[in-house]
Image 1 (cartoon, rainbow, N blue to C red):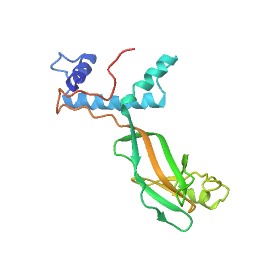
Image 2 (cartoon, rainbow, N blue to C red; image 1 turned 60 degrees about the vertical axis):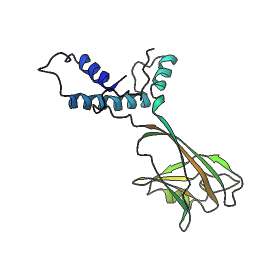
Image 3 (cartoon, helix red, strand yellow; image 1 turned 45 degrees about the vertical axis):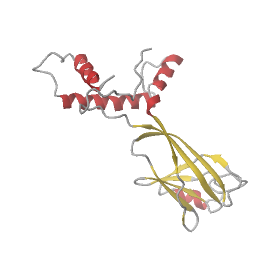
Image 4 (cartoon, helix red, strand yellow; image 1 turned 30 degrees about the vertical axis):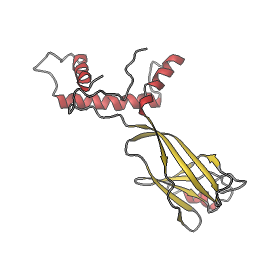
Length: 197
């Protein structure tokens, strides 16, 4: 569907397409259309759709977001060493809306015993408890551990104890829907499938 078709459908739906006196300004229409796309994604992602009653409906709501899926394989930065842990700093993609999955591969400091694992999310004021408590899974034992993730203003840091390192980090996420504008009205809008069930 083209951007101009979306604007025309919106004005037709609110019954103002042929009403020159009460027709909304195009900027107003675009504002409400873009607000609706963001709300649509939030409703589908959070499962707040009231008509979700069967497997087919659940599957449709999942497929509605399929074109917004992205995956980023981040380069592993050099570790910043602290007294009791190493820190790897990452930034989130600028178009990220929701994190879906995080895949991490760790290994010992020599590069052996690679293992896929997940993160443990901590806050900036509580991560030291897990660092200082030797019984937590943050600490590397039997070639297993879970790095800590601490949010920063522009992204996050992954923390490891000094006995293992991060080899790779992959982030799966839902991107923010592309903005609908009238700059190129014939541009095809492709963030959502155009099908009926």
